[in-house]
Length: 337
Image (cartoon, rainbow, N blue to C red; front, top):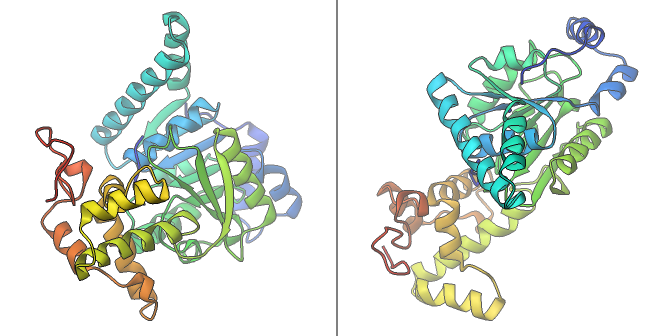
């Protein structure tokens, strides 16, 4: 994903659980049941305790959802929970400036709605919505959802936070393609105001509307898009960054001048190279290289030798201290790597 930053396990009421289990054991569920439960999301499972997953868990818990955060071991989950608590403390300090009691209550009440689990199957078995935020690898996502499809109630909605992979391809590993969509958040999740809601040709209206409602409830502006490469933002943003890189590769202009031109001439807050460093050069390269394989005749998706070479050197942008620019503490304003 433009991989990004930043969940109490409660039982569903007996009648809902019984219906969910009965529905799971049959090949299909009645339309009335889908309509009844597709929009009644109360428990959200977020799989992946990295920066993006913890961010999604945080905004979901703040919105009042009961959240289960899942990762492969307790150490990673502990780090994720600590990250959420620190982020909430910053939010509370600003939101309740001068009122330490309210700030403390806000943090503690939100954290009380978050639990952790190392078993995605266990968490999904009682969830209304499962959001995946793991590595950007199609096979890994398909394997995850294929396993969850066997244990989650038939009414449970599945969603991927992928930034570049086709939602329909991920959903192929399940028997609930009508209850599968995309929810693409942006980095850092607690700060960025947008979420893209993606529907495939199989996504039902009930599922799509439930995901739109969820996005609004967590405080985001929602935009909808068909299952097209990169959805809206990355479909426009990645080719823009790549064309800037190609200009420098051709010797048309310097990196610094390209950034300055776009900031002062187009009014952008960052130039394309600054933006690429912030997003993560490995993320940009992963997206464009994947698109190039899937759409070899599309010139907008042509890979960059310069970008791939920098990534091979381990210079991934702000997160590693170096990318197109030097982001180390000693660097003054950043300089070309």
